[in-house]
Every structure is written in structure tokens, then in C-alpha cells.
Length: 276
Length: 314
Image 1 (cartoon, chains in turn yellow, brown):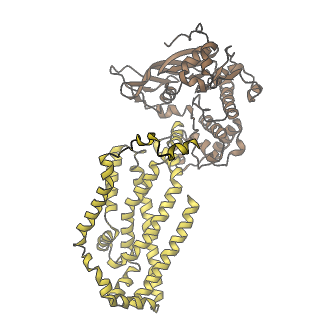
Image 2 (image 1 turned 180 degrees about the horizontal axis):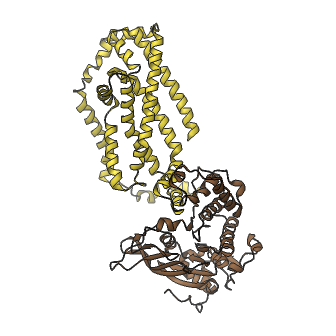
Image 3 (image 1 turned 90 degrees about the vertical axis):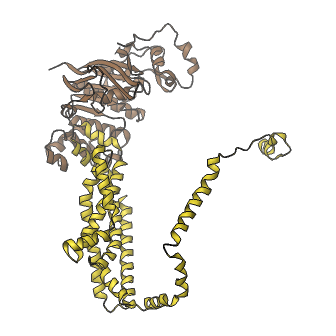
């Protein structure tokens, strides 16, 4: 009580003498400068991206309405083809993910700073950066040239792009492990390989499984567009139907994609909850 | 075969240049001894233990003569280089850690079987396939430490004391001739701690395993180990019978930390060590100790100046 009186009684001269600490120059200008930088970035990108044409969405609303009305009456006449293509899409994702994990695990170990020396880690990481930096569509274009049109090109494209991602995600898990069990294994006189196999991998297994499921989800989504460049899956009929203004068929395909991806996401989320 | 189990000559280590954690430490431990390593936090206990076990590389000397660690007559590391024999040597030395260092997601049995990793052929070790015989041996080791019935539980599901016993079983399976324990009881409750120390003392007495154990709690050093080595600021300041340690020396050794410690009373405890009967070990008859809690202001009067610290260093 005494304290409350002391603070609220403004007539006390003690209050006048209290200095309010001033933030430093840098502290005061930090947030305004960040906002200014973001604003500058947006303005710089406005013209080249023809953002001023955004009004067309409203003024030329009839184009969208045409597609929108088709969506209300999707044409499922060829649904068996679409579902078949969707299944193929999922199969592309299955093998793409599997290959990425099988090849990515050794690379993940090699790019973990707590397992390997820097002269191995750094080059491996740069290689993995390169594989991540290139989009799967680009890889798909390359593999279509190499192995011809069809789902195999899609599988390889997904695999190569995902090796880099898997290596990064997995090695981050490896770098976060508890080093003590590994030391316990080392103390038994085990080799480096055995330390990794019995000390590291049991610790990261739950995270690795979770990451794998997450990548599988993402790969199903990515695989739906690989068909656009002829690498198999549902992308091909989707692209053909849009190009020939078959909006009813397009809508049917999109609905199939959305439903499939949602179901896979739900199942995968449930599985991951069990794993972690 | 050499009678010397562990020999250190001029071992030094600094993590930051110019701030040595170990200053030319030399010591010798014979086969069959049970030795306590005591000292305040930061005195270099863990560093010494890790240097002995070859898990930590010691510093080289400018004239290339320093830092030899020999285990059972074989060089573990010398002059800042871990020997080629280190891996093979490690399998003869069991190491017990403060945090047990089991793989938490694997079964206790599997963890204990890992003690065989230094010996089984590569492919079998890689796949983690152990023979029926090896599993039986592992179970026998678990029986020895009294947790056979926990064999199929995950490591993480055990209490701290049980995990530490599993870790000891792992080093038994290794066929260790030497057990090096780095604060094995620091994170255990008193009754688990006594249980673990009883097991170590029994292994020393019945199996002749050489034990070097670093301990933060002095009472356990006095109660279980006939010989004590004390470290302060990286130097050996005492090496001799535990009975001869005086309260004055101990409170000086631990400095400001002595308030938190169990220190022996005015009369130094007559440490039993080996001769301590096992049936006493389960908590009924503990060494006469008193907690010197927050009453540090009484220390000077309790420990008169006349009691000088035991002869310093070597």
C-alpha cells in the first residue's frame, strides 16, 4: 500500500527528479529504417511486374467469370483418365521421395559438422545447395531430354531436387543431436561408422521420418505440375485442358488434385504426430 | 604384464591459449586400485578423465616431450597425438559418464550389447546383430548390476540410477580391465548414488577391475576409495590415502563451494573403502558426515588453523 501511495502521489518532488532513460540513436531509428527498406523494395518491383494491371482482374471480370461458372459445373466425363493420372502423380512422388532419401542420407551425414571434418562438410554443402537451387521443373526439362517424355523424367527430377533438401533437413537434425550417447558408443572402442549407425541415427530417426513425410506431401504437390513439361502425371491433362479453354474439364482436374493432396496431407500429418 | 594400469606423465591441456586446465599432471595408478579424483568445479577433473580415456587430445609441448598417457603399458596418447592403438585400447577401458550416455531410444539390452562393438566383425556391428551368446552375456551383466528385468525397456524409460547401472553393464560387457568414471553419481539421488558406488566397489574388489572415479561429493571418495587424488586449478595437490585428508584441507580445496558440500565432521572419517561390508552399504551405516549448509561463517572456528593441508602436489 505504501508503495502505491508513493507512486501515485505526483506532488512528491521525488517524481520530478526521475530521468526517463532515452533509447540510443540506433534503437530509435531501427524500426523506421526496416519499414523504409521494405517500402523501397516493393516500389522497385512494382513497374517491372506490371502490378498496375491488377485492376484488370476487376475491369475484365468476364474472363474470370467464364472460368468461375465452369467450376460450378465441372465436367467429370473423363474422370477415369484424370484419377489414373493423379495416381501416377502420387507414384512419381513416392519414387522421387524414396530415391531422394536413399541418396540424401549419406550426403546428410557428410554435411553434418558434428560428424565430419570441415573439408568434407563444406564441399558437400555447396553441392547440395546447387541441387536445391534448381527447381524441379528445370530438372524435369533436362531429364525429358535424357530419358524421354514420361513419368520417369518426373521421378528423377523430384529425386535430384529433393536430395539437396533432404540432405539439409537431415543434417540439421544430426547437428542437433545429443553428443553424449555418441561418446558412449565411442568409449566402447567402436569405429566412426558404428558411432554414426548406433549413436546418431537412432536419435534422428523420428525427425527424419517426419521430414520424409513432409517432403512426400510437398512432392505430390510439385508432381502435379511436372506434367506441363511432359514429365508424367496429372499436369499434362491439366495443361492441355487449360490451353484448349476446356474449363469444365480443368475444374474437374483441379478438384481431383485438391481432394487428393488434402487427403495425403491429412494422413501424413496424423502419421507425423505419431512419430514425433 | 605391467602392474601399472594408468600412467600420466606431464599431461597438459588448455582450451584457451595461456589458460591451462591441466598443468603438467603426472600420476600413476596400479592395477586393482580404486582411486577417487576430487576437486572443485573447474579444477580439471573431467578434462583429466577425458584425457585418460583418450576422448580428449592433450596439448603437445614445444620440445615434443610432454603429455604421455599410458594405459596398461600401451600409449593411449603422447605429445598431442592419439595413438593408433587408442580404439583397440578403449575397448579394454570402460568409461562411465555423468549423464550415462546411453542411446535413449534403444532398449537397455541393445545399449549393453554395444559394449561388444569394439570386437564383433564389421558387418555385424553395423547391422547391430548380436548373437544369442552375446545377448546372454549382456543379460548376465545386467543381472550383476541388478536391473536384468529392465532389459527390454528403452534406455530413456529408466531412472537415472538404473541408466547408470546399465552404462556400467555396458562397460562390463566390454570386458574392461579398467573402469573410468566421470562423476558417475553427480546427477543421482543419494540412494542411487550409493548403489552405483557399491557396484563400482564390488567390481573392484571381486573382479580386480581398476577403478578411477571422479567425484564431486567428497564423502563418497572417503567412504569408498582407499586412495584419493585431489586437483586444484589443474594441478595435483594431494595424492595419498583418503584417511589422511583433513577437513581443513577439503574446505580449502573446494573454496567457496565448500558450503554446498557434504564435508566430514571435525573428526576425519575413518574411510572403509574396500573393507567396508556390503550389507552396510545400503544406507543404514553411512560415514559420519554433517551437512555444512549455509553456516560457512562457522568454518574458521570449526577448523583451526593448526590443521595444515596435506603436502601439496608433486
